[in-house]
Image: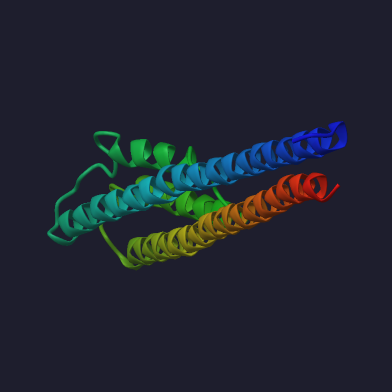
Length: 191
């Protein structure tokens, strides 16, 4: 490492490698945060929401069975349906989900209003509508989970690509740097 220009080129090469590593590290961190956010969303807004729908389906099934056996039972005597509806409403909903959820709440109000009326065609129709709403909401959970999974995979793929590119560029810089260092020494020997 004789001349000043060789030292400057060497330092510039090292600075470029350090900058490259720093920039790709920041990009990798962003991709990691994206994946982490997606996983959190899948759990909080899809898995928990699916569990809420499952609970609601069970509560409605129990109520429907009691009515079919001739029992007169308050629709939401212990507030479980309201609790589950509140929990579900706190998740992040798509526009379509909001529409169906609104219809579900309306249908549940109809069931609650008719709880002391003996089961008849109107009550049965309302139960069917509620079950249809629940099935639609459940299908949305699956669709949205798949979309989030694809987003997370895309982020991971981008991160993997960036890591591979980083390694290739670092290797190329290393080879160029060695070439510059060793070719500079050979020139001195010839002089």
